[in-house]
Image 1 (cartoon, rainbow, N blue to C red):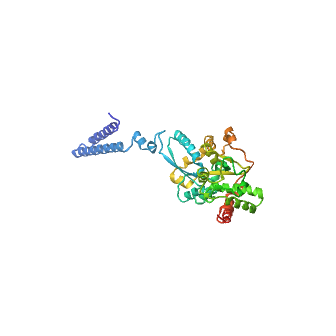
Image 2 (cartoon, rainbow, N blue to C red; image 1 turned 45 degrees about the vertical axis):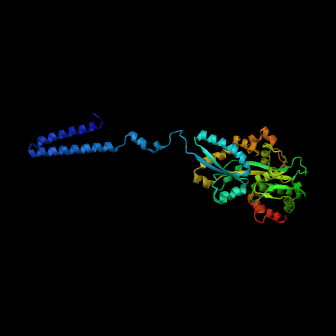
Image 3 (tube, rainbow, N blue to C red; image 1 turned 135 degrees about the vertical axis):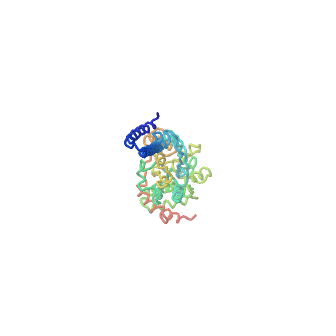
Length: 391
């Protein structure tokens, strides 16, 4: 007998006992009919109740199968592929292309999820405008903090982004290099030599290139330390920019104009760009002036976009990976001075990156808000210098 039948049989026996009692009491014909009808009705009610209870109450197996926990993916199952959009300034391209596959492999191994990257490179100013205008970057790695500030002011990055990651969110850095032709036929050794007549200088436009803004600050810093006043510095930079035949859009175009097109006697660019050119077999003659500027490049998560894309976790993991010795070594191999002190102390990089005697920072010049107002806003120092130049 099944477990379902036992309760029914027990009730049937009980009802029969009651019926016998009723039969003894009601010996008349109408009494027997009453008992029969009562018995039949009771049996029908009990049967329906037993069947209903059996049909509606879920079994243990059914409960487990319908629970939310049972519907989740099994442990270790691959997660849905995810895409991350990185927007960066032009000269970081080779470094990121070396680092990204290492992160993708690490994330796949640890999280069982495939990450693909969309990458965009260009002048830092142009990239900043593109993000503000709708390029949905998850991570931005730009040439200067002022550009990241603009994206914050547009409501895409949360305030306090500088404190989200180590080193005030500076993930790569360099210094300004002064490049000359092989053998340095014009005898260019320092910033002041760029003021001389007959010198042709190649540099990018500070209005579109973050690298060019650093170049300008390197020139200005050196001129102030030589002349002692802003007026003297501006006079010096008028002489320098008179010797610039064309302002390129970004640092990569400046490098191509100098090396591939043979323009100019000198080029100001990131040290890392020059190191990279020499690694590609280009014969490079350059000096790192003793009075220089620390070119600090910040990184930030674009909070509004990662919330929209559901990419915050992987975006944060990628940015943190860029600070690891593994990633910093790749930056250092490709010309960036490492922000990780352990990597910076490796002999190969100590030899590659000479110390600079007087290294100014953006903070020394008042911070980016003051720098932009003083030098790069419409009608500020750079525009005043350009207005004095007749081409």
